[in-house]
Amino acid sequence: MTMRSWISLYALLIRTSIRSRMQYKFNFLLGTLLAALIQISEFLMVAIVLYKFGAIQGWSMHEIGYLFAVMTLSKTIYRMFADEVHHLEKYLVNGELDQLLTRPMPVLLALLPQKFRLMPGEILQGGFLLWWSLDGMMADGQISWVAVPYTLLIIGTGAVILFSIGLATATCGFWMTRITVLQNLTEDAARSAAQYPLTLYPKWMISLLLFAIPVGLVNYVPALYILRGELGGWILPLLAVAALFCLLLSVRFWQYGITKYQSTGS
Amino acid sequence: MIEVSNIRKEFRTPVVKQGRFSGLRTLFTREYRLKEAVRGISFQVEEGEFVGYIGPNGAGKSTTIKMLTGILHPTSGHVSIGGLSPHKARREVVRNLGVVFGQRSQLWWDLPVIDSFDILARMYGVRETEKVKRMRQFAELLDLESFWATPVRKLSLGQRMRADLAAAMLHDPDVLFLDEPTIGLDVNAKRNIRQFLKRLNTEFGKTILLTTHDMDDIEQLCRRVMVINDGQLSYDGTVRSLRDTIGLPTVITVTYRGAFHIPEGYRISKEASEPELPIRLNIIAVEDHTVTIEVNRKEIHTLDILNLLAQWGELADVDMQDPDFEDVIHKVY
Image (cartoon, each protein chain N blue to C red):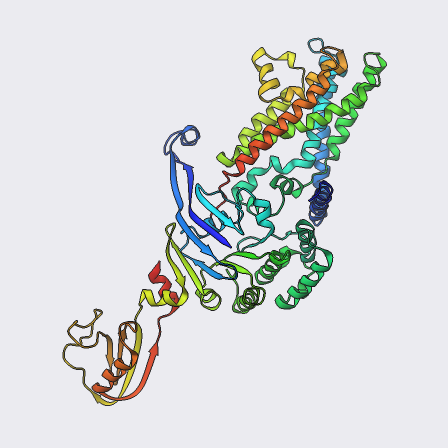
């Protein structure tokens, strides 16, 4: 199969997934609406933090808003396309992965479009926060318009990194079956930590968030360059390489993990 | 077509601790219990064969099928389907397989039946003309037309199974794996599905491997049957010789006109009669004018038995019952 037919198949499966969930319109709409409301309340919390403390350890209100927005948007892209990776446990516990394994396509490509999640709340929240912080910093003359394409780029690489972390964590499920707690640690806790400047944390934790669970590469490291001109221009291509490396590593791990799949009795 | 050599599958489950902090201790334990679900199975299936694969619950049937379809990787041993390993070249192998799990549907649960076919056609790269042709064929053979537009979740079990079967055949695979395709179906639906499977095998030459608990499936469809018990093949051969090997007794009931006399030596018991008698038989019951005996027809010719029985009195009626296939299987398990 050519790349193009893979993509068109993938698009078809995503359309199918949306159509499936549209069968229950009320549930679908209410769910989307509530998720958006939750996002707004989370945003209010951030707003309070920013307003109350203003700058934290030399990071301005706008800079912290930027870190937060980039993380939110990267996560949103990851979850929109790959929510089922995060919910792999369900497939392992019920043995639902069986069906996907009998299809003539890579398992991941069959798994991802099982559920395409629309996340308007997150996009709005993250987009607004990003616009607010960029606008503020441009007004101060801290950054120029170049920051905009750079930011879009790192949101993309960030999504790839978060996906890789999610995939590697989910893969552990082939041995452990239940993975929710592990996910709380590597996905949720790590990501929440990186919503604030890493300088807040002790050294060992910074290393952890940069090298072991590299959530710091999503927003903190690129922000050092894009917002403050630290490090150097080489950091952006390096980040792209790092993201691809994470992806490669996690996909390899996933492929190995699948050979340990245990299915369920029937 | 299908070659399986010495496959084994072990499942490792952590030992669950008892007592205080059991959950936490289980998490950090290094103790595992090994369960060998399949212990060294080998067989070959030629093109065009229809093979039944039977065994009690938990014997390893599904595990074997899942290894053949590439879902599970064997702990050791090799599988080859059409010359390719379903584990190393899963996508290529699966392209030429039809798989139906009776317990689970592979159709899109919330969408109309016909949509699943459209998606599958795209997935397997089935050309539009081919698709239309085959769907018309299946619709006729399996009577699908009446529920094309119904969402899969609203189908009855019989309808769903028919739809699933048609979906598995949409890409015209050469090999078909069926895991309990008739489970929970009524007589009509079973017959419908059996007829379809029979045609697939005889007219289209598909190679079919089927697991089931319904012995009628085996009797009506398969020429060859494999029995798995506790992870190992305990029988592999024709259905007919399976019946013979087990040697279950045939039950003969004779009714005599008037008086009859059973000679010395033949006793009414569960044990066969004494060996020095010319014919070994076992009298189960004597009532009024009827005598019921059990005899193994592999050892003795039927006519000899009838001759012997005729010597005891004047025969009015003879009724013979071959062993039920269910009983044969019961004996194998």
